[in-house]
Length: 246
Image (tube, rainbow, N blue to C red; front, side):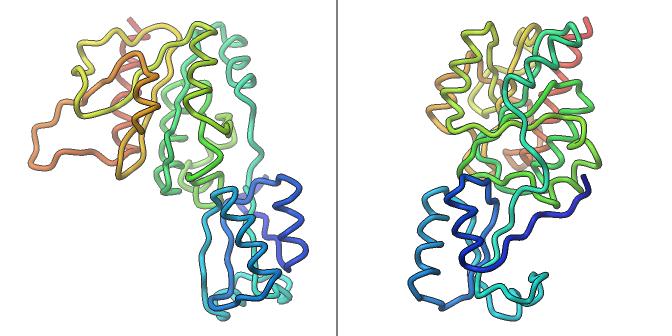
């Protein structure tokens, strides 16, 4: 599949897409449009925590492929999502302990794409993202991943904390990146592991952090106190790679 996103245009088509459970990453709505059908669509979008952009008619006209958008355009995922079981199966096929990235509400598509790229190069078996309050597999993500999206399964789950608990029952353990943790070089990061990376602004949420077995901090010597989410993911991933190679 190419890097094109699927655009759904027109009020009925967009509303049906939401009601059928299709994963919609973004919704563009004509700014100021307040009629009943549009309000219903916006309500559905908010129910699923879809990113909503209120834009001018010129922007909708630019985005539209049919020129019959009726004031709404939905953008669906450009790629098909995997299941968590597919990721574990990939590890089993390779005869390796599972190595999974779990992303807690990453919102920037460039960060998500870069993390998928790092996950692929670090030998991770897949990436897990939440269904809500996070960016999905858009064309921007695909491009930023430099093709890694074609090889690294990405699963979308309803609840990150619940997924971590379920994977713990299968023998995995989890480390999250957070400033207040143990220096990463002092942790044993071998075996079946999940690397949890938090939101660009707020980091790992409290509940997700409480479900992690270890909190790892990255030593920093500069004048600012945090790394970009995708860079932090890369630094920690390659400490895991180093330990797995020993």
